[in-house]
Structure formats: structure tokens, C-alpha cells
Image (cartoon, rainbow, N blue to C red; front, side):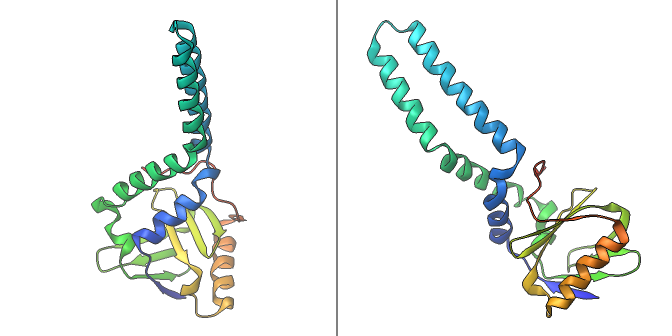
Length: 180
């Protein structure tokens, strides 16, 4: 079976941004920010002789906590844009031909050719309109479902991976996901 697809950098970043709030790292950062703000208010309260500083710091922290999610998503988008600008990820955004055979998945672009044996596939996800495959080598594969000409081809592809790897198809973004 052969699948041809192309994914853009913006599409890949948007996919991860849409689901990053589900990850453990994001939740830990949110808790860390909240604790930092509470400690800052407490510190200003203890050291300040004027209630003006305490009130203004409290208001500033409250406003930051209100807009924290938007700020963090902007920072994460910038970080992902920077990460995906590295040469390592150039082949992600090229027209890709994925061939599934008895040994595994073969991905080829005009920049590289990679073979992923069945035992190197770590996780399989069906999220939104994408098939997301995590590998043990951290070369994650995002395949748009629209690249399948028939719905039966998508089902055959997923079932082939499940049959050859004993992976379970999941529908939620991975909690432990992070890009290196």
C-alpha cells in the first residue's frame, strides 16, 4: 500500500498547539506559574510597607493568570516554529511517499528515505483528521486522513499497523509528548 501526502510546517505546529494543553508538561508549567504568582504576592506582602505594592502586585498576578494560557500558547508556538526550522525536520515538509510492507513503514522524500520496522513504532493515534505515529527514534509521523483515497484504505492502514505491532489505537493526544 502506498500513501502520498504533504504536510506544512503551519499544519504540524497547529496540530500540536491545539492539543498541547492536554500534556503533562503543560499542566506542570501551569501549576508552577500559579505557585510562583502566589509566592510573589506573599513575598511582596511580607516585604512591603505599603499596601499599594501588595494590591498592585496582586492585580498584576491576577491579570497574568487570566491571560496565562494565551501567553503560554504563543510561547509554545514560537518554540515549535524554532524547533521545526532546524535542518533535522526539513524532510517533514516535503512531499512524502509512505509504503507499508511486511517489514514496516518506508517513508521517502526527495531529501531522505527512512524505514521504520514494526518494532520501532511506539504509539498509534487517530486525532482529529490525522493519524499520528510515534516512533522509538522520536521521528514522529503525522499523516493527514485526506491523503487516503478511500476510507477503506485508512482502515486497512490502521489495521495493518495494529496487526503487525499489537499497538492500540488511541484517540487522545499523548500526555507525555514533547519535542526535542
